[in-house]
Image (cartoon, rainbow, N blue to C red; front, side, top):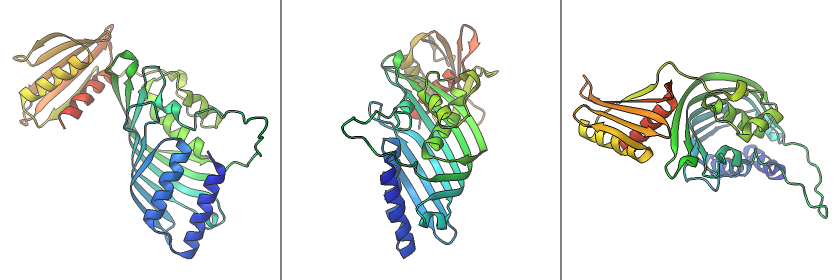
Length: 321
């Protein structure tokens, strides 16, 4: 992170607060620029409110885009962030947040055809190259950031693996992390690493450099052995307000796009397919509520693969929106 840039940003912000002329849109733009510099990718903020009397900040629809070299789209979709800040510390040029509440709705982890993960392309993961001998840089103190308490909520993680072919293997992991609390976070890098690692814990994604970064930064929240967890069920289910024929056709198209159809019967509402060794079964039927129910089951070597089933269902949901 460019410490000089961030220090200047905080000083300007503090001066504006002291003069009482801070506008939400001005700070919103500054936050987008500052976060983009820290992460090395574009950041978008939907809504922003800044309170001086209550010393609070509320950010809505905070989106972090994929880094260069990956498909366009959001990597992190944060519904909202609530921050209680320390005004005297801010006026002194320091960021002290007694409380941060972050609601991460969706994180999309992408593995490109070269096997590189999008989370590993962020600035917090990149190794700093040594400065040329002719231009040695003066060492600078780490920028002052202190979060007393972080409360983190994570809804789900989507993993898209493009090493399998043109169409990615998609898996969806329902994380359902609720109000998990962390204390004493001391850098922006540690904060980002913590969020990424916690979100990725249930995915069993191996080889991510972010795990090593988290360890170095003191975010000791790594999954034991980074091993996956098998659920008791092998299927994912959802209901849609569409006709049976439309649901069947979309399901057939998604399965054909991802793998090879082995059998299909529109009369019975059953489609079977093979996806890189995964045996998939889709069942489409009208529900008692007049909607159309789609159930996707996935197994590999007789072992339930619920994440693959949820990944297929996710793609069907996207087409039936």
